[in-house]
Amino acid sequence: MTPRILLIRLSSLGDIVLMMPLIRALRRKYPDAEIDLIVKSQFEPLARRFPGLTNIIAFDTKATKLSAMRAELQAKNYTHVLDLHGSLRSRVLRKLSGAKIAIIRKRPIKRWFLVDLKFDFLRHDPDAIGRYFETAAALDVKDTGEAPTFDLAPITPDDKLIAFCPGAKHYNKQWPPPYYRALAKELVEKGYTIECFGSADERELAQYISEDLPKDSFRIRCGEVPLEALPEEFARAHVAVTNDSALMHIAAAAGVPTVSMFGPTVRSLGFFPRAKSSIVLEVEKLRCRPCTTIGMSRCPKGHFRCMREIEPEQVMVAIENA
Image 1 (cartoon, rainbow, N blue to C red):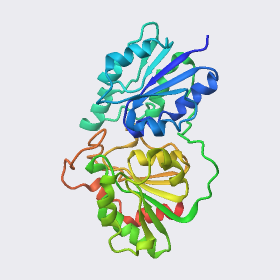
Image 2: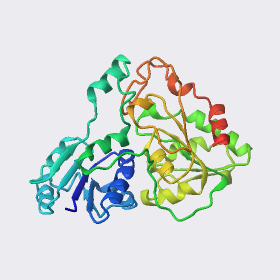
Image 3: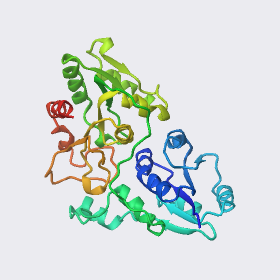
Image 4: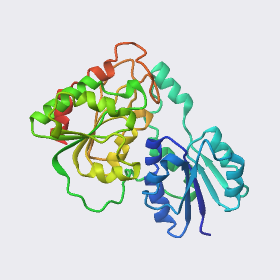
């Protein structure tokens, strides 16, 4: 029997991008299957770029009633529901009669041991993508280590164009703005141009970074580029310089070499990029890492060494080696 599969991952954007290898694997295994995805409405345009999906179901947190959506989903007679979110809302949505339900294993106890006690019992566990594949065990698809990838038309990158993504949802996942500013100055002196991406709220940050640079060397694109257009925009760049953020995952999936700074989080938490062209810079053997699973509004220790000790010179070397 050809399965009818519902995937649930409402947020966040980076986690949604990491679903792409599972969707591809399901499509290869079941070329005629219906494979639908529920996401928050603001992420729907980008999800439409994911190869292998049949339908995108947009969930508006302000307008959508869970009971009405669940009734609509029940009418579709899904055979398998993969809850890749594990939230209260996804719990309500996944309860469909007759469907085989699989729920992501987030390993909260192991996370607690790692973050709070610094005992790493997650070291040999699957990363975030691998955990998605665990939910699909009944559908007989295997994680082969594939990275998220958009299907883009060929684009020749400009070897003198650098994409900056200096924003982050949480303060302590953001490499210090003065470091971005120093790096931008050095890049421009070496003949590079920079395009800066992010939300409209991050325009002020971009303006700070570019303050002392020639106007034609630094273009602020924050708030100007729709989510669904970002893959092609990133694909024009030689390298993307990012924090641990959703834009990092989008850039890597667009095939751009990424240089990313990871501070409060570590590889064992499962969110390092898989792309071979991705470089992660971190301060290893810092005893206070990790201090969080998703980010915080401050450094709990007050010194912020995990980011401050990644110097602009290190990032410059990584860019030149990318």
